[in-house]
Length: 493
Image 1: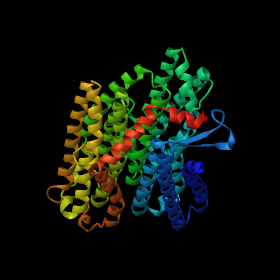
Image 2: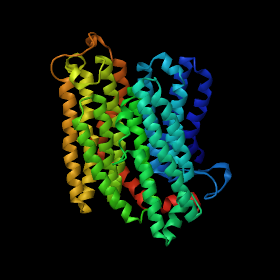
Image 3: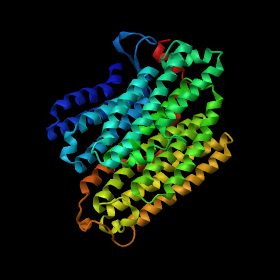
Image 4: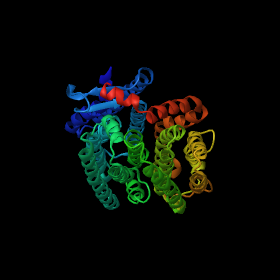
């Protein structure tokens, strides 16, 4: 049964390699990509069920026992995120089929899309820091290709910034890994959890923890390391922007959750820094979103703001806060991706993403408008949608821990988020029809809307039926806050 753990990595890797040799066959590439992502979803869903019922699953590659060999670990956090990433990959892939040109698909889009999923799933499932670095690099190289695909001047300019920033971050990553190995003699996360706790050199450990904060904070786009994200995620087509905006920064948040609950849980300095950074990230991010007048730019800047809530939850560091962080993370992956797809639909209809150049879409395409409305209100945290319950758990956890100021900042951020979402709705969807594209009324977008329905349905279900999902999140948080099961499963103690 443990062989399940490697399949979410192996399936997209093998199919991606095969599709390199079929670059000129659009039909084969599409069918194979859908089969691969669907198989990922089925395997990941079953793996999550097994983890929930039977406990943490591990596999030792090459039969080398941990901590000496490479180990993959599926606990509640990693398996559920792999499941969600598989679902999102299917949605974005089907959306891309309707919006990408044949030429773009022939330029190795499908192989690199699947290689991106290799990096994402590997980052979630790996049990040691060096292989986390390796999977990060796989993910980043694939994202470099996807974000520049199209070769427009703006894309290439922003892609260059994206490459430079992430390359610098990777240099610090491998430096931090080297320092940690020099201090502890291991890179296995479960082994590190024990050895770091036994170290008397607390100052050295704190420095290493802060370096990792810089690395994973850059990947997550926290303050003040967020400046690369809004322009970079504005550049690619909607399907790629939805995948990046919904998933890639959340891989950075996942690594923060994993390392600071497992390896550095006793370093109070880092958690104090995380609280401050979380407040600054959410507030400055939402101010940037409010000031924008472009559909996609507002959503791109909002990624920064929403990451701030997750960083705040990690900084509070109580079981309820970690549960709220996970719930909010899942909600944000779903809703942020859906909103980027609706931005792509609006741009397809009108030929622009600038708010002042579009109006009246609710009259010409009412289903687009109301589905966007649901996703937008969920992002703002309006009940009974998923965004409300994620924020509610974080607010309660913050009040219980006595962090009143940061909670006040989060509530103000929520109000400004609602304002920016209403600005999009009132400007783009309300009012008289005004679009630069004379055929806007006749644009049929039914197939595009169908691909987004699973995401909208999920944000409603996560809100209306919140109790079992909150309970799952609390069990997941207990598993993270008490890593003994993780350690015992990996080291076979």
